[in-house]
Amino acid sequence: IRPERDFIFTYSGIDLLAKRYLIQNYDRKPLELPQQMFMGIAMHLAIPEGNQKVHYAKAFYDLLSQLKMTVATPTLANAGTAFYQLSSCFISTVEDMIHYMQMLLNGGCYSNQEVLNKSTLKSVFKSHARFDKSLPGMCYGFAEYENSGIRSIGHAGYSIDGTLSEVTIFPENNIGIFLVVNQGSNNNFQADFREAFVKAFLVSHNQGSDSLQEIDNEDRQGSQVPRSIKE
Image (tube, rainbow, N blue to C red; front, side, top):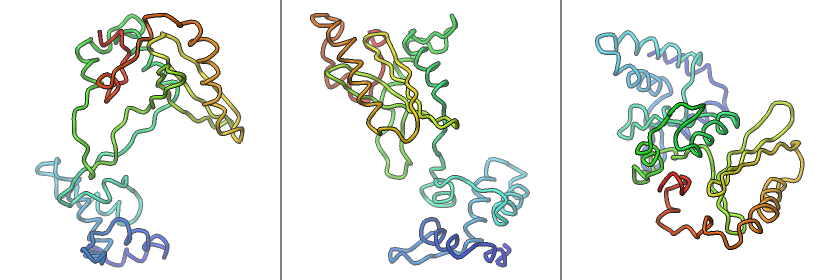
């Protein structure tokens, strides 16, 4: 351990580290120094390296302690503790999500290739674990909405050219919309447009149709898979 590397931090940096990431007692007093935290993380990350784990622990420590490498919040906070949940979020794009949703709507197939078989597809949307407060969260990268009784699945995206994008799929209707708006515009525009689209093209068109039967609570909880796929 190289304690002098603690002085690499700025005041705000070391203050944030102490408040959020160093192991604390019940009185919120730190029980370790930054270099001890870095060594604990490095040793934890090196566990899978077998006979090389000491070598890699030292290598990881040198990178971390000199701030040449950083790790996500779950790893900083949990590595080396009894709650060693290291998983973090992932970043996707609207284009990726469009392909993903097309695959869902096509029963697990994309470009005439089977990506997921039907049993796997059903399993994807089941609840596989109870909520654990040590987890950073569990999601599929998209959200479920309801407009005028019509269910939709959406994913918001971002573009570097000054626009915000959103893709929305209406699974029971086998239709979707892709929306791009300027940043700084009305924050409710996407939701307002989605509501207007539903009222103009889906509600009136499907009145009296059996295809839009109400989804019961069992279907809705923990499930965002289109009814046609579930059946």
